[in-house]
Image (cartoon, rainbow, N blue to C red; front, side, top):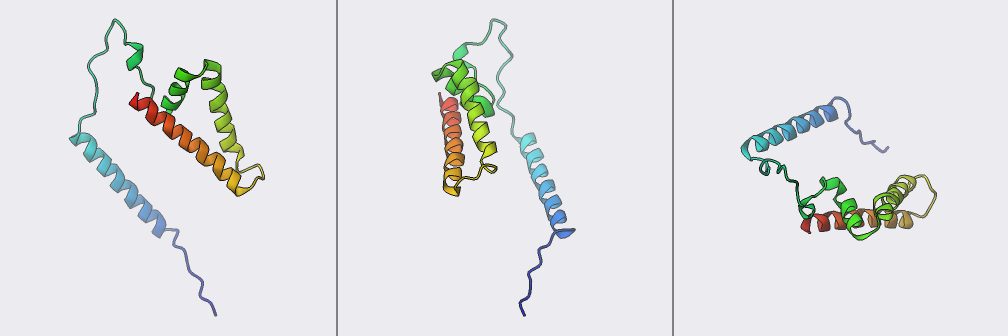
Amino acid sequence: MMKTKRIKTVPELIAKEFVAVLLACSILVFVSTVIDAPMGGPANIDGIPMESVKAPWIFVGIQQMLRILPPDLGGIIIPLLAITLLTLGPIVIIRNSFRSIIFYGVLVSGTILTVWGYLS
C-alpha cells in the first residue's frame, strides 16, 4: 500500500507565510531607515533638459522605443501587441514551444529595452 504525501496548507503554510511577510517587511523598514534614498535637489523652475528625463522603471522600455520608432508604433501598437500575446498565450491552443518562445521573447526584449534605457 502506497502512503500518500500530505501537503501542509492551513494553518502551517499560512503561519510560515505570515512569518516570511513580517520578516521581509521588517528588513525593508530597517534598510529604508538606515540607507537614504538617492533623491536629487529641488526642482528647477526653468525646466529639466529632455536628455535627463527618465520614466519610471516599468515604462523605460516604452520610452526607449519612442526614441527609436514613431510614436504610434513604439508607444501604442508594439506594447498592445506584447500585452495581447502574453494574455492570449494560455487561451490559444498552440504548441508549448511556441508559447514559451513568445513569452521569453517579450520578456527578453522588455528587459533589454529597460536596461538600455537606464544606461543611456
